[in-house]
Image 1 (tube, rainbow, N blue to C red):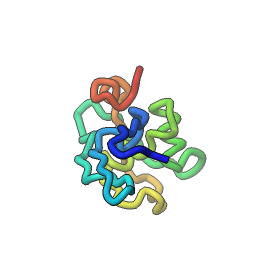
Image 2 (cartoon, rainbow, N blue to C red):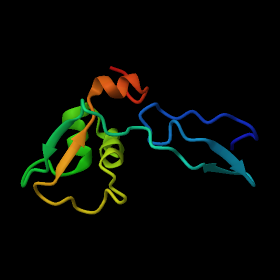
Image 3 (tube, rainbow, N blue to C red):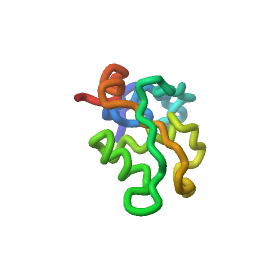
Image 4 (spheres, one colour):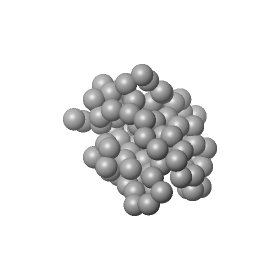
Length: 108
């Protein structure tokens, strides 16, 4: 059971890591969050392949070394629902590991 006022620690790669957390009526609520990763000229651009790696978690694992960072790819590509299939040959923007480290999202 959580004690009132107890701080919640989230891993730095969590999409909610920089989100305000509130306790409302004993329930933990994540506040509105601002976009953590925005497009940048250093981003890698890839085309969604027709076969093989086509899920965001697999692409995140391949390019960022961590499947849990799928939300970064969804966020930077303005995907409101990353569970919806991404069309083949759609261009995806992927931030570099170094940039994510500078933003505190990833420890390199």
